[in-house]
Length: 281
Ligand SMILES: O=P(O)(O)O[C@@H]1C[C@H](O)[C@@H](CO)O1
Ligand SMILES: Nc1nc2[nH]cnc2c(=O)[nH]1
Image (cartoon, rainbow, N blue to C red; front, top):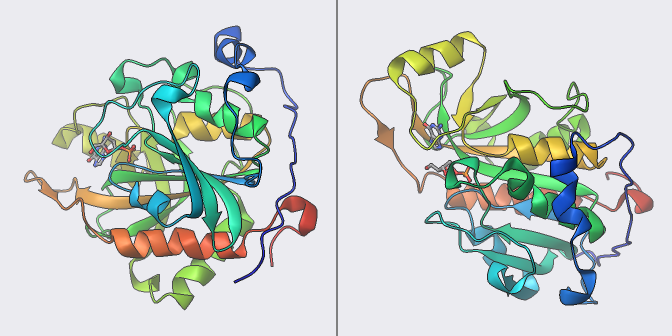
């Protein structure tokens, strides 16, 4: 296993914040009230989607902080989102896992939904891996497929520019990792559409989203990606397709290929390096 050489690397925002309400919670962040383990300086943050918190269990030398013990952190209310910030090493690389994310439909503002991403930039994170459970719209998709997020649709809009939100090098790396792990036959790529939820789509809504060229739909991820890009982080995202929306009967399988999904993220971690020590190998 390769030794991790995390280096703290701060990314000052190049653009003004989209609005004072988005910045306010961070200004009140009290660094002195929360001390991450000094031996683990994460340069990758991983947000675990619904039912994908098992990723955090793969971390070695891990230290978990319940969200309730972290000042100003929101609390997880959705089943399958344990509510821990877990520091540790995956494939020898220092990372921090959000075992549980926040959704707009839980009643949180977008500022609070994205608060952990802003906090992760203070911790030195330079790459964000977002994961989620999503409904498949593309008729070629199957339940259990893993979709590499190539782009997203976010109708309300926010700046900065999102024309290159998802890092192309990390996407290429993911396809290589999937090939090595025998996952290529069910690795798709596509456009993730963010909706408010919490209801799944009607048949009519699914048809509209498909006509907009969305391949999968879910209730998260996009606000986190926008804030991460605003802070200059590289972003990589995977959706686990837990159900298909092309029929009137909802077929749902939340277990899908969770194991393979976690292995892909783990494989990616093995290949991501600090920007400072060469971008990708
Ligand atoms: O956190 P993610 O986007 O994985 O959560 C999705 C959206 C809903 O919370 C839930 C629906 O099953 O999964
Ligand atoms: N909006 C939405 N979110 C999901 N999360 C998992 N499946 C779905 C779905 O079909 N629709």
